[in-house]
Length: 494
Image 1 (cartoon, rainbow, N blue to C red):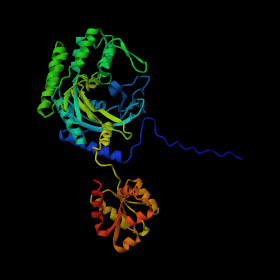
Image 2 (cartoon, rainbow, N blue to C red):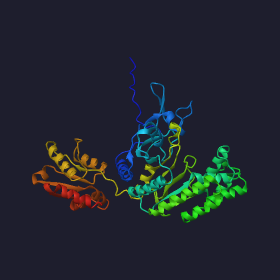
Image 3 (spheres, rainbow, N blue to C red):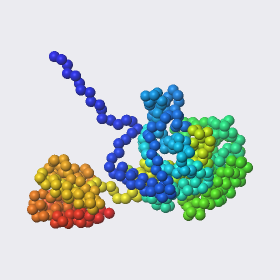
Image 4 (tube, rainbow, N blue to C red):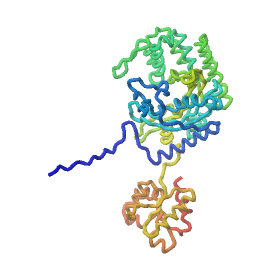
């Protein structure tokens, strides 16, 4: 007897580090992005959409090793044997677009972009290999005026997205200020690259480890609670104290911070430029109504300064909330940006000034959801039950009237009975079910069932008899009053 061959069926699974999204999460993100991009457009920025793939050599600092084309990015070879990679961010495609179309673009060139990006990195909790970015950049405008506009626009975008004034702060620093500090402690950025990185990494841990932890990392090194030892920057004591003085120079007012910086690093040419730029940005922001409560110079902002060439800023959420298990959650930075004047230089050989911002869509959306700032709990559409096979046109007409009134509505199309249809409405998170069987149709009525109220009351009613007598979440109205009745029922949810 011949052996029966097994039919191959692929396993239904999703690649590691990726996720499916559905329904309310996507709707909430779409609404938030619409609010942010309306602000971008109000400032005169135009949308730009670039391909998911770019030639790998166009990705700049994310260019993989020659022998490891997938290191950091997802890559493949085209049929002409050229390597292409999924975009790592939205900035590298912008650089390529500007260089390719430079002569025909109005300069400064202002664009915003929204879309997914991909990173071939180890995934972890809340860290995915595909996520959405929402950027706005100005190319061809020097500091500080374009930087001020970016910061002001970011503040408006956060508030448009649902973050209340007082619940966020945009923190500012400048790459030239850091260069001035390194020069003052005798660290040559070109010749002492490893030492520079150790200093930067130590300073970047200020928020987490505090002054003493940074002191150890600037010196011989630090052993953490697990026993792991991190080699320090090996600075002498006087240079450590100078770095710590820099970290402590953030004052209550931006003007006082700039004054302290002048005393610390004013002797450096780069440092003087950084201080002057920060002072001008702070003065312009104050004139626009952004005082220290919304935009403040903070010298503990270190991350990104290796990449940026001038001012750098990040927006931090100031509130904390609790997750579903009652644990405190602090979201920290939800947007960042800065000046990177080497943006187009790789392609054209000349420096083109540029500054931009990028909103962390997933983190901002998570914060809005936990704080209930994104609105009431999402609900599904009104579901019109289909109880009589020959009345489908009538049911579709009901749903059409509800949609014409601005409500989400659908007709059940599954072909099952009433019990299954009600279960379907529950799974769809429908707030209301519309019912018209033979009896209701004979009377010229429809029954409105408030599913949310019904679910709440079912927790309190102890037996079926009591439920049948009360029927508090269900009522009938003339067919012509369908839309008004559904609207009134939904209004009670707000």
